[in-house]
Length: 232
Image 1 (tube, rainbow, N blue to C red):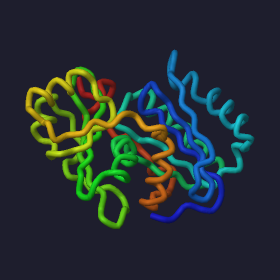
Image 2 (tube, rainbow, N blue to C red; image 1 turned 90 degrees about the horizontal axis):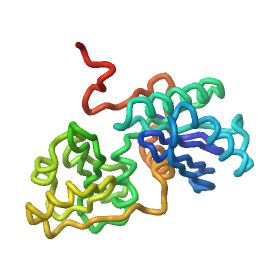
Image 3 (tube, rainbow, N blue to C red; image 1 turned 90 degrees about the vertical axis):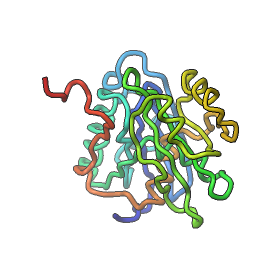
Image 4 (tube, one colour; image 1 turned 135 degrees about the horizontal axis):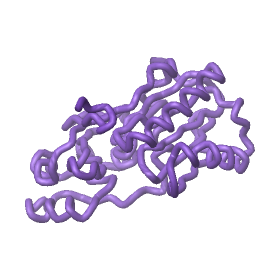
């Protein structure tokens, strides 16, 4: 692992239908953007990215590093984002940081949590259940540490396995909130979506984790094999 070079860095997050971009310069956030996919990520991504770069007046060939969300998330969206980021990084001969979605969702809340307060990040995995993980932020404010490693479980399993007194963030759908009530988790806290996009959090994590590496090493994270890759 190595620290990012000096200069503008772009992050791309295509883990869900709410796609986000962010740009930082030497650790300071310059711009961020999100939009809701109407057709497919692969069809809309490059057009939205070009429009974002035009608004920020930053040329595509000026980036000294990139960051990409590697999931978990939707198969098509993740593949489109990863291949786009890898292609840009290879063409520019710059490093690429691969960032976990749940860590990026938890990060803004870990930074504002009370001492030793855990954070549970979740996203709706559809029929398989709920994708989630629990994190703690070390006292020195460095990268998140797992309290419960990422997995896909039922709502009840998530609620019973998650640490007590946690901050919950991410896709807090109704079924999960009901399950928390059923299990009397009164000490938990629910956080609304922050003004910081996932792409912006990814840049902070990439810097904290010194995660900039060979672009070829980035690969999608699936907590359960997608249907397209499962053996028949």
